[in-house]
Length: 327
Image (cartoon, rainbow, N blue to C red; front, side):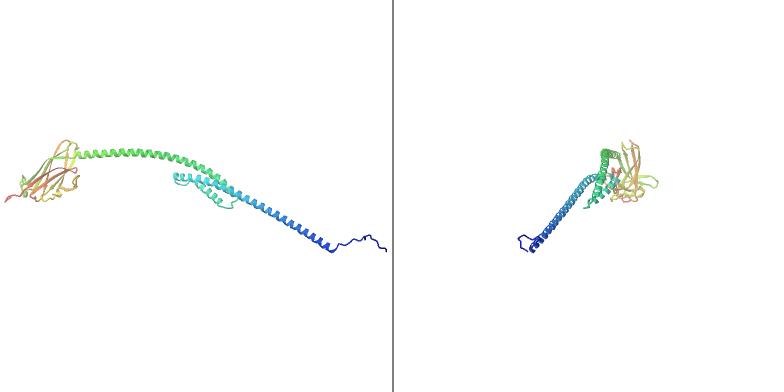
């Protein structure tokens, strides 16, 4: 066969070096595509997670805002309630059924607000309770206003009554003082005066006759006589107190004469010898006579004092002397 310069129709196989490069390029392409896919997925995932976190943050912020709004509403209601409740307690003294219901609502609202993760439903419940609470507070305000008005009327009436009572007490005190002064004046003015005071030592004879004597050992009795009168004293009984002081300074006191102790107005308590009742007629002068008896009379001065109404109204002295040789 003759040789020609035309190429052969049979395909030519690439050299081995060319095949190696082509495989590497394909692998690199596949790796790049996978890497790009992974990055794309990561980017998409991160964006999605970020969106979810953003939505969660927005939701949390919304819930916090809602919670703060509810708390602010509650704080305002509590402020109103505290100012009203104190006044109502002062006026009524005991908690009403309305106040007890209000306290129950407050406890439930407080329990919800204490939760850091309170749900929307719970916050809605709290809003409903606060709305009811505000309505009850308004009712309580009306009750306090009514009670306050009644209390003011009572206070005004009490003030008026106290003023009237004070005036009456002052008038009564004045009347009482005037009455006491008048009574004292009348009391003092009704004290008798004594005049014509006589002290007569008497010797009683066996035959019944009496003889005046000044000898001490012969005296059987001292007859005290005097006149009493008072222009304003009413008719009726009056007691005269007679005190007889012997020369030894002791007041004669014997059971038969009704002696005792008299509280005087100026001299304190003093023993007396006899209390002599006198039946007095107003505007007249009354003669009084009373005998003072004793087993043995001493020589010396016998002092006679007469008291009425606590005042001394007269006094006199009688001297008894020592008898003669056969006296």
